[in-house]
Image 1: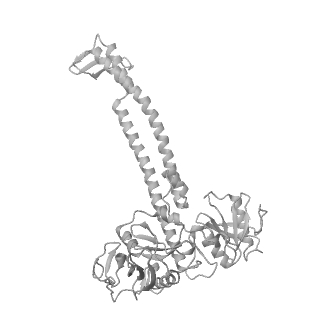
Image 2 (image 1 turned 60 degrees about the vertical axis):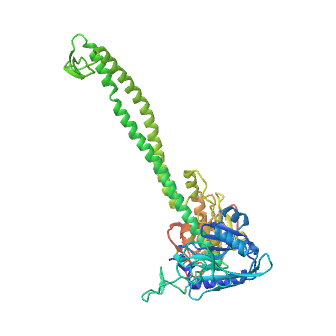
Image 3 (image 1 turned 90 degrees about the horizontal axis):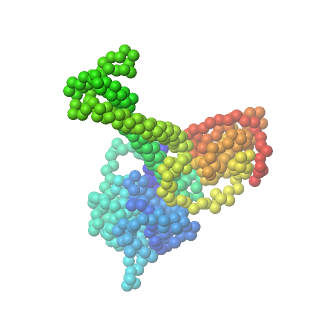
Length: 498
């Protein structure tokens, strides 16, 4: 399902255009927040902390209203490019007169009217071109000529100084009418349980950004641990090589002792000396390589010095190798735990590995409807976990997709209609077995299987619960789940129905 394509198709953009008209017409163009190189937010001085968001990223061009705290936008805003400064100079305090969409094109034109320093009326048009690779933002004069643009795109009607026209688009007769995933150009991005299309799009892209950030941090954590392991393994190899270069300490001591024991009878031939090996029960004559420029006594002293170095090196290296072996084992255990954390979406563990907090993502203002949600019964488990039980089908959807977070645990009676149940888990802890059992019992009790002696209850992290397009209220699909068998009942909990 390619939601990215759905978000910028013609029909969806028509709906966004209509939505923006009802909110923005007659409002003044205010402060601009440069959120990234190709995305920005504009303050039209609306109530409820609403801002117009525009992105011309080729992979995800889009426009809609977002709800943010002003200080969050200010914190996220970076150094503005020249286009943004030019936009601010020309459009500040201009009034938005109209918003229109070019027919059969993913292009919106926002017409502004304002006064210059001399009190003269000036008209400009801001063109949002949400057309994939040619996505761009243009500022036009009253005659439709391009004054400036956000990114470099080329072609007829796309150059500064020229009259604007939509980018050339070759349409092949064999081109299918459906987008990736089998969705038609006429299909509108689903609002789901959100009040507006803007809210639905904003929520979707925020989740996409959070998922991408998590994947990036996961790769960084994996890379960091693998580098740490590799560094220590290389050091182990080097230390073992150093140990080998020092040779066998006992061998050097034995050679020194044999040379001294054979001083009177040793036969030296060039750089070799023949000695009787008194340490061998067969007492053979062996050959030892020496420095022919030194005396036998000096050669014996050299062997004793090599013995001392080799012995000390062995002791020191052995200690260091033991430490490194323990560190490598610990890092490999961390690596195994990291894979589990990535699978579980545990961002706190990534932070522990990386030693740094993640980059702040734009955060929506909490919906008051979410905070004051009354469509759920509230319980507190024996382990002090909050358990929410949906009251009706529409409440189930709101509870699962608006109230619950990805780290919360979701439960529902298998094969029977019933309440969605959420175990709140803001600290991403492991859900205790007792809490899981109590929540499962509630899910079974508040379902059509209440009269059954035993009921199978599916449970899974909220992130694995999806809403199929067009599905009835309360209907969901699960990407992954486990099952527990329980007796339907309301357990004796610390808090009762709310």
